[in-house]
Length: 125
Image (cartoon, rainbow, N blue to C red):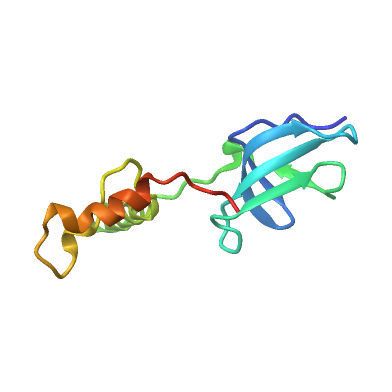
């Protein structure tokens, strides 16, 4: 019996950790998993896997997650980790995030090319 998989689950496939973004039925009676890479070698990449072809799709259960205490002074290590993760997250919206830090006098017309580029539809490759 095949295990139930759903978007949002964390799975281990081919020794890498992935987050399932979508589960579709495939013509071979299994499922196609569209995943986002989480572990170091695959972070930020998309992976597509057919469950019938994979040797093992191991669901990483949140109940098995081991939490550790942050024993740094003032919880510095935890705050540094959270700050790093927030800085890695892409900015959303039409606002230009770093244009005001350029080596120029910030005038509205100087940012128009960037605004125009950001408003273009995104092509997926």
